[in-house]
Image 1 (cartoon, rainbow, N blue to C red):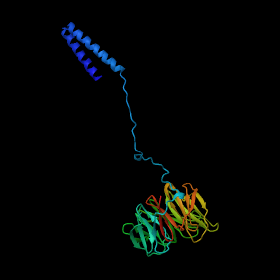
Image 2 (cartoon, rainbow, N blue to C red; image 1 turned 135 degrees about the horizontal axis):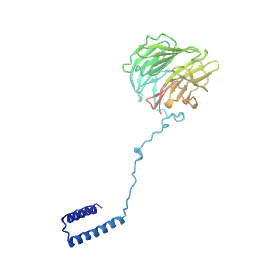
Image 3 (tube, rainbow, N blue to C red; image 1 turned 120 degrees about the vertical axis):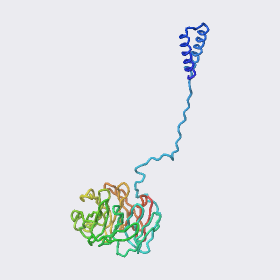
Image 4 (cartoon, rainbow, N blue to C red; image 1 turned 120 degrees about the horizontal axis):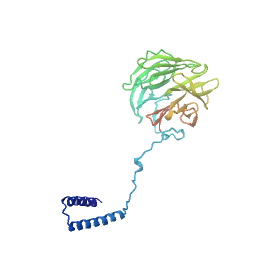
Length: 334
C-alpha cells in the first residue's frame, strides 16, 4: 500500500509538470494510462487480500500473582500449629509476657530477658523486685512497663535498665496496658479501680474510674488490654462464681459488650486475655486448661483444651503466638 501511495504521488507530480509545460505528447498520455491501469490492478489485489493473524495468549506464571485474602491471616483456634519452640524455665514460674515489634519480654528467674523469635536471649538483667503481676510495652515511652503489686517500673529495651516510676504512688496494682498516649492500671482489690495516666511530657494521673463504673463491689478485674480506643477487661465474680470478658470504651469506660465464659471459678487463679489479628481476642484460663477464641463483637467462636495449663499469651512478631506455662513459654506459628 505504501508503494502504491508513492506511485500515485509520482504520477500527480508528472501530470502537474506536463500541464504546466503544455508539452504532453501521445506517448506521455499512453504511459500515464498504462501506469493507471497497473495501479488499478494492484489496488484491486490489495482490496481482495485477506490477512490471517494468529494471536497467542500471554501465559502468566501463577506464582507471579498474589491476591491478598483478608481471611488468610485470621486466627483459627482449631488449627493452632504444633509447638514450634519452648523457652524453658529453670523452676516453676507463673509469669506474664509482653512484647514489642522485635522482642518478647519474659521473667526467666532470676532475670528479665529479651528473647527473639528464635528463642535466643538477646539481653537480660536481674529482677530483684518480687512477684511480677503484669507487664506491657509502651510505644510512646519506647519502654516496657512492669508492675510488681505495689510499684511500676520502666525497662529499657536497649540497656535493660530498670527504673521505678516514682511519680506513681504505691498501690495494689494488678494489671497494666497502654494506648498511644496513656498508661492504664487496675487495682488488686474487690471493686477494682482503673486509673489512666498520661505518658508525655510527664506521667500524671488523668482520670480514675471506681466501682460500680468499673465492676461491682464484689468483683475483681483480673486483666486489662487496650486496643484501638477500647479496653478488654477480664472480670471475676465470686458470688456468682463466674468469669466474663467485657469490652469498654477507653475514653468513657462505657460497656460495649460482655460475654460470660464457661469457666470453672477459682478465687486464686487469674484468667487473662490477649489481642489477636482482626480485633479478636484469646482468653487464657489456667484453671480449666482451656483457650477461648472471642470475636470482635463479643461471640465465643471456639474453645480448645491446652496442655500444660496456660497462664498468659501474646502475639509475638505478628505471626507467632507465645503461651506461657509453669515450665516455660511455648511458641506456635500463626
